[in-house]
Amino acid sequence: MLTRLEVKGFKNLLDVKVDFGPFTCIAGANGIGKSNVFDAIEFLSYLAEDSLVEAAQRVRGASGSRGGDPRDLFWDGYRDHRREITIAAEMVVPAEVEDDLGAPAKATTTFLRYQVTLGYSAPEGEASVGRLSLVGEELRHINKGDAGHHLRFPHSTAKFRNAVVLGQRRGGAYLSTEIREGGTVINVHGDGGSFGRPQPRAAGRAGRTVLSTVATNDYPTILAARREMQSWHRLALEPSALRAPDSLTDPRSLDIDGRHLAATLYRIAHAAGSSPEAVYARVAGRLSDLAGVDVDHLVVDVDPIREVFTLFLHEKGGLRLPARALSEGTLRFLALCVLLEDPSFTGLICMEEPENGIHPANLPAMIELIRDLAIDPSFPPDDDNAFRQVIVNTHSPGVVQLCDPADLLLAEVRAHRHEEGEMTRALTLLPYRDSWRASKQSHSFTEADVTYYVAAPAGAQLRLPLDLAG
Image 1 (cartoon, helix red, strand yellow):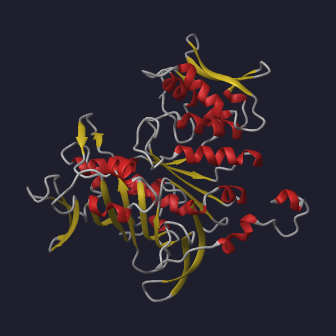
Image 2 (cartoon, rainbow, N blue to C red):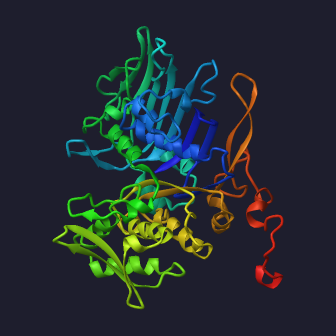
Image 3 (cartoon, rainbow, N blue to C red):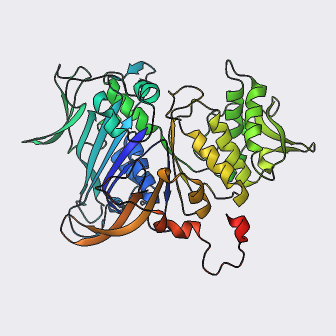
């Protein structure tokens, strides 16, 4: 669970600090760069598993070929000045994970702060491009006694915090940066704290983050942090993927584009201890919240001859429709219904404009479903309260009006003073004035700042009578 993100020098995120809860909605105008917040989160996730080059190329909007220019990722990257990106994340990590060999690993502490700083190395010749370089990397624990100051969103201390913030550590960092005469090194410290020698890694020669190289249970807490970051995904449900057939040999987990929908639902319904009829009934019941969808029941059929799974929706009038015949909005809603039933799908989900393809009358059902995907912090995580977190962005007045103001962040481009002293404009995320995110030291927004989300647009010709509008 990502509880706080700090970004400096990444795209148009000059200096952003933001706290996250189980559900967050970022609202802002088109084209101001609010999706760059998702890019920063994705970039961290990629850095946990790929080389620096590959991570940079996978980020949305960066040059997508192996010869791409990494300056795309830096603030004002094409001006002749020092380029540096620093991203820090405070996170609750899983207490137990598996290493790359399938062996269990148990984290010493589960509330951590990770920070990575990347620089830019200029090209060495005319026929080459610059590259990213590792400047510094740290992974530190947050003491259980300090957790209340960091987990600022409303939650149950006894049922939630005490269930997810575990362990203690007397030693220092798990990863630390040290400047030596021969150059910068990243020290890897064992879970035993001060005991044992740290293992140095030369940052100047590193083609990837040190965290991404930890693959076995020798360093269980670093591995747990890596696994947590690998579970941060941008969910981009595509109709073509949702409609694609699933063979019996395909993966049975929903991909981030929606592929393997039928196979995933079949696996959930037929898992040990599950009742297929009950699972299908719950998904059908949730799908029936959509206006215009006349659901009686649904089921996943197995065709042993063609060796495929097919998801069928049965309407009350007797019509039997395969998933590929459903509308785009219905398919996206159905995919989220399936995810809601899947306790194995955990981590952070980022979603762009969830209102796309949804009739205005169905927005309340969509927002309620998305909120239900996120963990309820009044209770501990379990199979009925999966440890999931959801962040969405939108420019839709309908979505903004349906969100609790405490869950909203208003994205705006505002004037900032750069480190070099000059004024510039960069993205700012403002919390609601009376919410848990707001503080006396930070700017916030009020109802007056979002009137364009709640008032009829200028020139509107269709308005509700006053006795209905209220």
